[in-house]
Image (cartoon, rainbow, N blue to C red; front, top):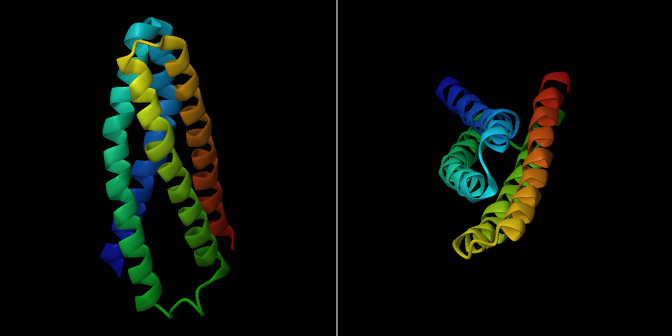
Length: 147
């Protein structure tokens, strides 16, 4: 149970910390130093690598989270914090799915065609969804600690 808890925490830290880094460090630095034909491919490549890590983190979160619920007292006896974490986590995973399956491929097509304004607009949509997931992640952590 302790190993599941540790892996669960590390996976959540990777996902939320990565979003915070990309949003508040990488993006502003790229905007400040690179023109769109350089900045947009950089952001796309960085996101592509990050998305693979998040996919792994999601697998770890699901496996360890379900293990801890089942090994504990089961779903019916789970605390409100655990239920909030599960529901919020599933919502975050769905938003991630929309980013990766709907928006990211379009971004890559715009970049391949050197359609910089369209690529920038698509990246902005991805940024908005990442912002929502960041907020959800922080609220989930708060809810688990407070409920």
